Length: 146
Image (cartoon, rainbow, N blue to C red):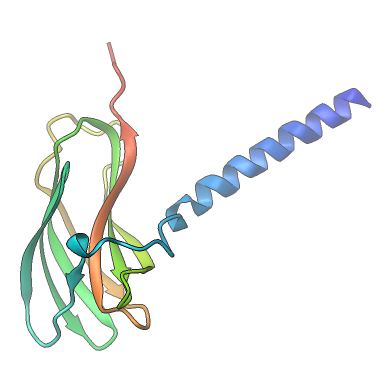
């Protein structure tokens, strides 16, 4: 009986971990982004800009066509990381995140020299009600490797 409940507990923990990892990409949806981190979308022209939120800076370019955004650019991240994802956040008029999309992912064991000029290019479907964007990162800090 005890073996069976231990197995069940272990299975439950594994299942919870898988679910948390799967849904961790959705954790930002619903949060409000401060005004100073919001970029208002401009239609009918090519837009170039720079976003800075230390330790992240993003030089970006985008154009909007119907319900899509064609975006490209370079991200720079000053902290040392084992892995890094750069996300574009799509915001409504109140600055609430409607959707997020990873535009750059380093994978694991990011090369120490690859913290700058992290190139990305994506075409993304826009969510209904979007009026702005922002950028965010997630990843694993660099561990000591010998």
